[in-house]
Image (cartoon, rainbow, N blue to C red):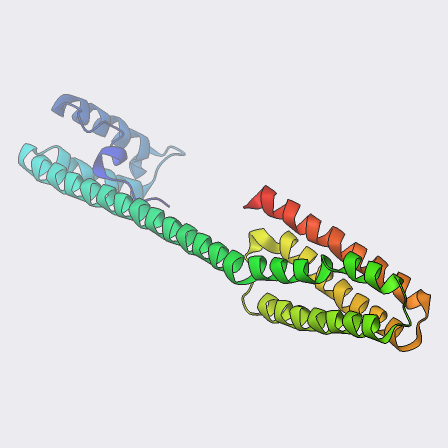
Length: 229
């Protein structure tokens, strides 16, 4: 039960006149006095009513009590103000930390991963066009194998960067697209490498399809980045 002050006990306002306080006191005594034999009789309430009237019915004690109430009110208001300010600073700090986390993730993860993925995907068309002149030419095949070696290097760097820093919650979608993009590239590189070993066009076509899927996932990541960054 909420603790009441003397004014609330006597059901009067803090600006009530002495006469209003006396009238309310008499009304409440009749209502709660045990000797009244009424259903509202309440000994504990009568005790509270008497205590309240002893204070508010005396002008000097009332002034002292009003000062205490005012100090209590001011203290609570200051505490509420302090709580609001603390909450504001806390949320502001969390917001700043989240923004710093986001910027670090973009710098240390998104941008370098995106750059290495680009370095893997972009040369493929030119490499395949060159190789198509004569897939059995040792020099052309060696150049294509060098390209795949570079692809593995870029992929490894991208995977290391991707794991180096936890993604912010707001970047979960972007991170998911990048994760699957890297997986597709890894599988695609292996398929293309199988082609260099046995010249089976099945591996060549599968590798190209996996690269195509990876390119689509990269675009999805870029689109998601624009919607949340």
